[in-house]
Image (cartoon, rainbow, N blue to C red; front, side, top):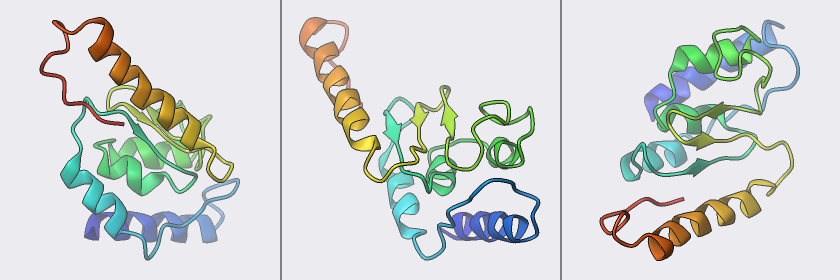
Length: 134
């Protein structure tokens, strides 16, 4: 929770100084959400977030350096700097976050959960011990 707050404060400061371009939605005061999620998820889980995705990505195991590089528009970001603040995606950690519209991620999350159920139904032997969530 403290890491999320410190990271968000650093992002907000950089944004206010004009170092992060575009628009950034601070996550200040909502640190408990990603902190709680971090205790409940695994790398194999499918994680989706809203437009305040940077602390959720951090809690999902995405590198803080990669998140910050993405915010700064640098090539070292998860999307090589093209996603910016609100569109953070990390395939390695199954993090699909950062839709710009309110509640836009809900149909995607429903589809991700359904894909897990279909894996279990269509290939029960392969996924018998599967405990992934979305």
